[in-house]
Length: 356
Image (cartoon, rainbow, N blue to C red; front, side, top):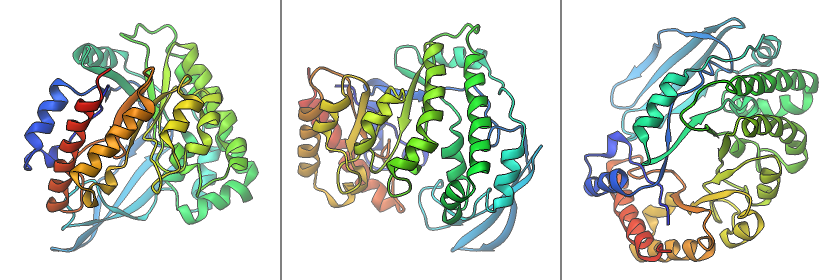
């Protein structure tokens, strides 16, 4: 049974981390990130300006202004980072880059060109990876990236109330992605690319229903996925939350792999049903909600892992994966230590029950 696993650098010195590191290096079957396209900022060339500290309250938080320069003008954001949070990547957006309708309009009016790629860097990293994993590289998802980069209280309203603007943005940016992917046809790549997106979780309930998904996501994503398949590539989508009711639609629009398939109450995925519905069409990965590890016993995690293997392992096409992707996660060191301990219980159970 393939088991995906990683651990962030900031957690590597914690108790039990050495065992995780050893497992990652010798036993894990990971999708490892490699470079290929430079997607810029929202599909545009950009220059990152120096960050500006707006406010620094020692021991409490620091507020930072970020700004980028593009052909469509300057876009800026503000983040707030708390000193007592263990994970350095955990922060609060006080203001997103696309925080007004005017910002969205500037994007929609911009010129989107084929993005540059570095096939030498891609080949070099693929060769370095060898057979210790599958190389995966990012592909720009215009709508998902727009939502993540926008004021969420407003962006879903724009998508409905500003239909002309939305259509212009989606048509131009998705054509850019299609043309960029197809530009790889004559490139000598070490292996057909596996592309990944972190977008669909922002485009399913409670954010967006099926009707608007069919209008604003499906046709554009299908064109991109058709281009990916035309060059012999694959698309692996990351999507938390309520994806169970969308799995067949995901497969219809050309997704080849989906993770992390969170079960209730974190999502709506019933793993056995997912396997029966689309297991013959997509690689299924995940189903272990490690956000609950802080409250679960090692025995409960053992049973959860056993059940996931029982429900989805038959016939292959399934990899075990924590919903968060890696271990050692938490707002405090204490939480991270608990997380690592429960992850070790997960690994033990996976090795015990996951033999084909």
